[in-house]
Length: 320
Image (cartoon, rainbow, N blue to C red; front, side, top):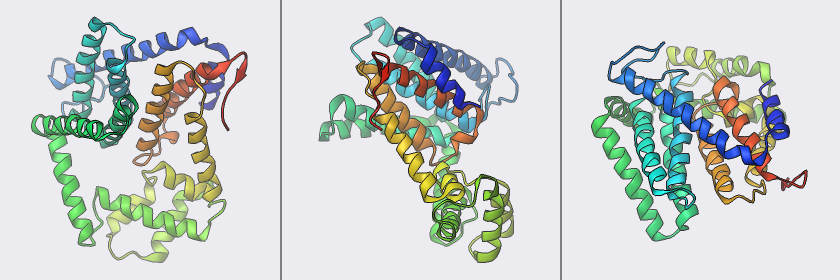
């Protein structure tokens, strides 16, 4: 159903409407930031948002992807020559607030995606030089240091992540990071048994349960097994590999290539298409975003806009 949005956008939106639509997206995110900070500072209550997790309108993992995209979009506008100094000052203020909110929340998915994509952005604007690498490390390091010192949730999640990694080295996989590793192992065993076309879209959970029972992994306890049997693998690539096999994964990777290959003449939109692809598909390593309402709608919106930007003389120029 959501895939229809892409075709509607691609056939009804004009090129000159792309930037206003992106600006409208930013305006919506700015409003959500006001709500989130109001909840954080206990000025008001809003739905299920809390001080520890001030995500106002959606699940915190999904919201972290939205915030990461907003941060990188704003940073790209700051580095662009298409905006005035006054506009860049506002963009910088907005960037600081949305990035701060990203690290105040508990969504590591968007945090990791933003860090990797910041390097992509710096390499786009300054090429892959020693200077740009050092600049990227300084920017990322300052963000992490500030977040660690001022965000209790980020500090607690960081410490928990370190403990989980230490447990993994001791062959104890009963933790957040450990469960993700076991999902990789389980997925490998399932794909090895069903390599080409997978087990089918409706049978992934039952196949995970069957594999956990058959393999009897000694490094996880019963509660971890029960958790894994009820939920998805927390990874879009693993989920596709289990459900659709190697063929399905190759088609998925080819879709990513097609997005990156869109021939977009407007430089700012072309750069944005690369940054969006980086944010979204890095996030897919931590969460299957294509089975979620808000993130798949986000994907359709922006890919639809990029498709419009690539249309020239009523023909789509896509290298695929």
